[in-house]
Image (cartoon, rainbow, N blue to C red; front, side, top):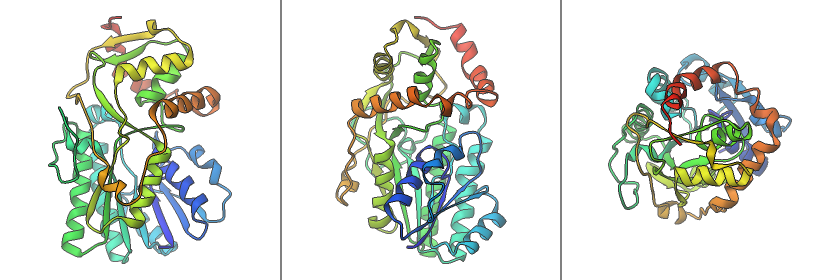
Amino acid sequence: MKNILVTGGAGFIGSAFVRHMVSSYPEYNIVCYDKLTYAGNIDNLLPVSDEENYRFERGDVADRKTVERVLNRYAIDTIVNFAAESHVDRSILDPDAFIHTDVVGAYILLDEGRKHGIGRFCQVSTDEVYGDIEEGLSKEDDRFLPNSPYAASKAGGELMVRAYHVTYGMDTVITRGSNTYGPYQYPEKLIPFFATEALDDRPLPVYGDGKQIRDWLYVDDHARGVDRLLHAGKSGEAYNLAGENQRHNIDVTRRILQVLGKPESLIRYVPDREGHDRRYAMTAEKARALGWRREYEFDRGLEATVNWYMDNEWWWRKIKTGEYLEFYQRQYAARLAASSL
């Protein structure tokens, strides 16, 4: 393992992984490959942009010719695939992009990787493939029950990885992370969305009753988990990276307001989104057996995250224009008009 291609490396979790790998492994060459769609942001990589073991290539994971060129140019021997359309709300509005990137893109990377004889393929997936979990904890051998186009596309990508392991003998490993939060997250996701909206004293649209439960994992812990499983995961296996920090969405919202010193009167309960899962929860026992541990308790991580958005308006204010505003209007305008306190 020497020349590592990190696809989707300008995105939220991917960029945290790139920053971690560049600083932790100076002997590795880290090549970030990203299409730079709305959520891919080259600013996320500024902390490592001048490092000798870092390179950036712009491209689509579903573009076979460009993938082939990059694999050849850098003699890639390892692929870590973060590339994905990842926002459930957007998958409901426009499923096509999710199939293109999450399924077709995974296939192209696997197929070109197989032809080039790469040593390991790591697929970064999500707890949402398990679907709604009323009670208990999801384990790696539980069946898939995805309920959104996003979750279904991620499950499809995983199944393609499995097929290439079984059929062609590729060395693969899959990671499934729980809801991830932290700096540099595109402000359409719950924590950065509500933090940046509250900073401007704008209403916070909470879906339904706000009692949906999510398991929260700090982004640096997620990056370290992928690192550990890339190096130590058993070929053909999948591993949960669980934050084991379950919280109701409404409680997370209230805590954001507390950190910012903002009133709860900003909360608006809006009509729920379609097919909204009530609860995700996983066990990370399998990853822990390989030595991974999360370092951030939720309250500590949330406070650090909210403070980062307070201190880095330069990063997010320029994002919340144009395309972002168009999405906001499509997703929330009618809901807020029908909202209640």
